[in-house]
Length: 160
Picture 1: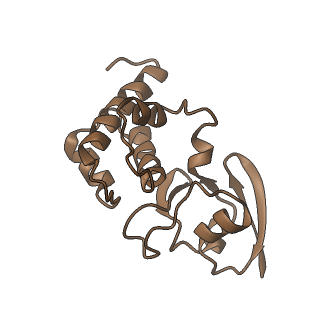
Picture 2: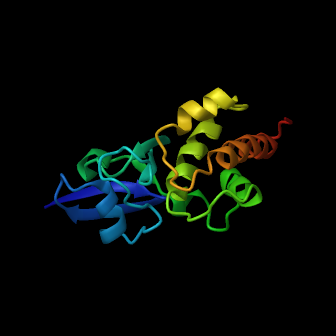
């Protein structure tokens, strides 16, 4: 066991777990952050995506020891009231069907709109390509990412 200290959703956290434990399990089982989902366990589906220092990362294959001293954001950390531009866009575009993959989709989209002001369809397809949706809501996801980028620009005082 090792004490791993990091910032989670803006708050300092320390977990005393095996250093090779996947971050996903430390988040879900130790810290109660169950919004991050287990999908495949091989970083192929994207359901477990979180941000580490702002970068979308698959938590199922990331050892908890690698986040020591870093900032981790889960779906719960985007906003407490669905006010994040991506969350607002997801709701407006009515993206989710079963919802299982949505936290990973949203986290990946949030990282994209944070760094790309006006993403093209190809930018969105490239960023989102590792996130699988068994319900096939890919067109709605693309629509929501465009909408989220507009919301993000408006929040920063720009117009789209």
